[in-house]
Image 1: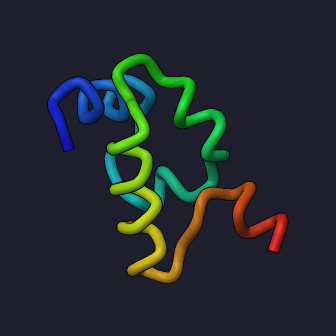
Image 2: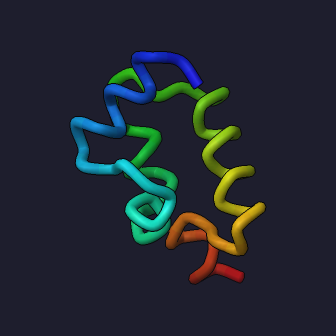
Amino acid sequence: MGAPARRALATAGITTLADLAPRTEKEVAGLHGLGPKALGLLREALRERGLAFSDERDSG
């Protein structure tokens, strides 16, 4: 993942996947510096650990 995406996450207080999981994908996508590639990487990392963005868990 690129530096702008990492900075955007850190600025939002997201430093671990556990910090990320309670957020919606829409919320994370709205962070400046986070694009589709980074979102895909985050989605896959969450999935590998049995986690998901909160909207994915709630809808399924």
